[in-house]
Image (cartoon, helix red, strand yellow):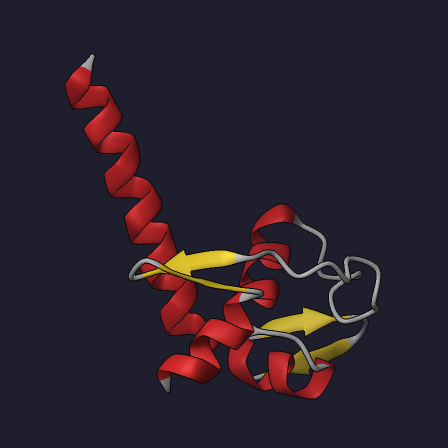
Length: 94
C-alpha cells in the first residue's frame, strides 16, 4: 500500500484517496508523480481523456473500467504497459 497525503489529510492508499476525492486511482497516481497532489480532486483538470482498449474508444479511463468490469487502476496499468511496449517497438524499428 502507498500512503499519500493530500491537503493535510493522510490516506492509507491511493484507492482510498481516490474514493474520498471522487477521482480515479490513476488521477491520484499521476498527480503524485507530477507533484500536483494539492490539485487532485479540486475540479481543476476536469477534462476526461479518451482512451482506446481492444479497438474500442471510451470517453475516459473511468468509463472504460466501468464498461469492462475492472478498476481504474487496471486500465491505467494496461495503458502504461501498452505505451511502454509501443515505445519499445518504435526503438526496435529504428
